[in-house]
Length: 78
Length: 377
Image 1 (tube, rainbow over the protein chains, first blue to last red):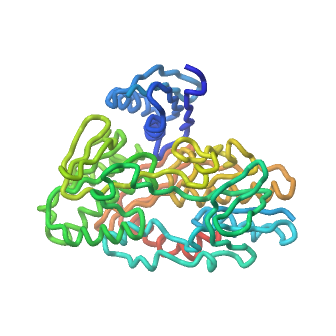
Image 2 (cartoon, one colour; image 1 turned 180 degrees about the horizontal axis):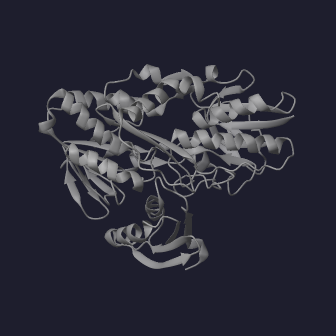
Image 3 (cartoon, rainbow over the protein chains, first blue to last red; image 1 turned 90 degrees about the vertical axis):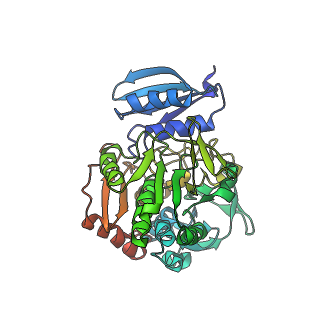
């Protein structure tokens, strides 16, 4: 996987529509096999995002805690 | 003399053009605004057209009358942006040169992107759509109304849940609420996009028997079976489908190779300069900034862009930053409503549902034309 095939969405500070909608947008725009990484400073994302990723049938590649925010890396698999 | 070109005569573009005309001397810059129709449309009024409370004529004014005299208005379609040569090509008129370009083009409704949408769905995201919905509501005698969104992102994230509340109020007044089931399908993990406000809206839904399902992102519509399905694997039937149409970024942004895959303009969320070209600014719905696509966001962003363009034209250091501020007004029906303001650093505070909140929204609707396009507030 090259860097060109990963989309990074900085949704820190987004309360409306919020990081989950940014991720859904990114996944809809991505091609199968590509990575979408969303950055969130919203604590609710830690439950919202993994739950949606599982429900929608995509793959959570990693959750990385950074200072003041979390990076969620998701692979579009269908 | 420097040249500033603004594309788009909505709230963001109009405020920027007027503020620049106010602050830059005539010998400093020529300001041109290009708009495809020359009409300024107040989109928050669409929902009231759908529910028979607003005459659509009240939502449209001539852009010329809202602009300061020295802003040159060109009624034409921008068809190509050439960042290398600092030019904007128009469909009919001459090529425009710019020193600074402001893109305030709004979002584009693309109903054709979802098969079945045009024949199956109602919406209130254009004047024509709102008028058709009003007629459909007037003749609706009962059954299940499914309210949802075709895709994300879309303008005004609270609008579909607000519409569900308005449907309840409308059919209650009509006396047939017991014959109408209202079911809201939310693409997110809650019924209202703003987490702190969600409990308030959930209480309204429970009190007024508005059903809801979360994590429903539309995959397809089957008009023959009157059913809508999600990528998460659920299907619901409907008698009326009220669905926010699919959106994309501006066509000229896409055609010029400046957009992402959805056509949204990659824009730095604090400076509002586009990521690829620092002499091009993005405002409002056409950008990929992670705030709600709303007139309120464009309104606050426009002031930052005007400050930065003035600094650039004068060769000064631009220091203005957009703090992510958005103000949101919601009408829950029954003359109750709420409003809230938030930014990148401050989440919204759960507001009380009140008559005062409802009046606030009505005052904004009334005061808009006097205060907002001119940049007075």
